[in-house]
Amino acid sequence: MIETDILIIGAGPTGLFTVFEAGLLKLKCHLIDALPQTGGQCSEIYPKKPIYDIPAFPEILAGTLVDNLMEQIKPFEAGYTLGERAETLDKQEDGSFIVTTNKGTKHHAPVVVIAGGLGSFEPRKPPLENIVNFEDKGVAYIIKDPEVYRDKKVVIAGGGDSALDWSIFLADVASEVSLVHRRNEFRGALDSVEKAAELAKLGKIKLFTEAEVKGLNGDDKLESVLIKHKDADKEDTILEVDNFIPLFGLSPKLGPIGDWGLEIEKNAIKVNNAKDYQTNISGVFAIGDVNTYEGKLKLILSGFHEAAVMCQYAYQIINPNKRFVMKYTTVGGVEGFDGSKKEAKKEVVQSIA
Image (cartoon, rainbow, N blue to C red; front, top):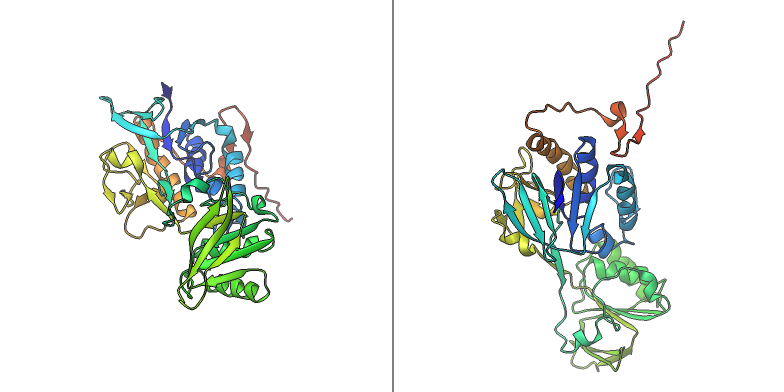
């Protein structure tokens, strides 16, 4: 049995920042995540994509953000159960909880925080009969490392931001990039649409609109794709390729958490945002993209704010007879569980005679 003060389900940016906020209150955290590494979507889906709305960082790669968070929380010695999915939640007579994973690992804590982002994800796959045969043999649904496609022939299908952004990015990486979309109009940002069109004019992207990938061919690995055009007068196009990447989005699912008796609305957990981000189960909180309330903004920075507020109320549950006085880190510094301390810089005031 793993014992901790706060059990965090989800090791994405919001879950990681919770460790920092809890650490300031001398509360120990343990995190559970189904992925084999920390970082959530930022590590698993788009580690090389830039994020522009993190305060004080005009631009930061998603993977770098995770690295920085891991460095920030290092003094607070969090525990991790990675590569395991939180399966069951059992409330004990004293109000604490036991959470068991799909591999049987048990965790005991007085407070449970669900910070699972949008839940687990399943890619929306195009209806191609043999697509499963080529998964990891030329077919991928997300791009983790663009260097995999260096000097390769790549076909991307889709009409949203991901399809446009990766087509633009890979134009300078792959030997050939083809973008296939079933309509003439794209759903992505206007700037990306214009940039893709310009690259198509320069011959750096082959653009196929009003067309769909309808066939995959190859023996041990993908060798070519069949593109069918809506215009009946156009002949089918067969492209020799190394990789086919259909980017039609991901379907979020709460998974087993959806069976814990929580109040769910549109695949998200309802919380009391007027106070503490607690769910309908006392002692269970939900923060970040996994929760919902009136005016909710699904932004990483919103999750950071919710984590800070939540920890103050979690402290009261864990230490009902103690009163905590919040101190700014610029005044009190940051003291880790290992005894290390980042001292607050003292303000020096000079008087003028």
